[in-house]
Image 1: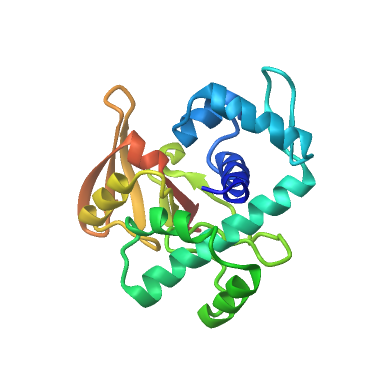
Image 2 (image 1 turned 30 degrees about the vertical axis):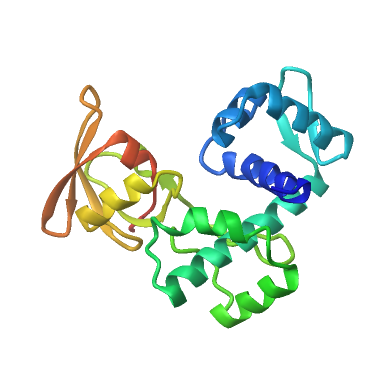
Length: 220
């Protein structure tokens, strides 16, 4: 991986870490997400701080600066448009595209990605429902909550699924749960860490890891 690709990757991971959690991103958190030693990550964070791409208080939270955020969102845009292309045109499934896009996102130019977006019809969401940043850095919005927080008796629609664990994506495939699926929470079993769910006429049980990986919108 070149330094430029490494920089893009670090900044992208810093930004995406905040999409699913409000917890502060520290060196240890970033190292865990990247699968690297904290000492290695700390050195890169120091260099990114010197370049004005992140702000990092010693032993504290790492935050993107405006320049760092711009690069991060540009990389996320490339990643998610590539994922969309792989699914729509090359027949990949949603559990296969993340690693491929990780490799390709550093090899394409902004011009290529803008033309790819045009060919794809300027999509707002990728195959996992993740918002695709626009070329100006703005993001499509929406009111979402994670499925593990949905109250008993509520009916919701799946709008987004985390791509961090392909095994969960394959598990949801086996249950027939996809973007757009309507789910009703029948009963929560906090002690067992499961949720009884009705999916159409089918009763399914979701564990909390899968429930936390699903984002939904309320059905009025």
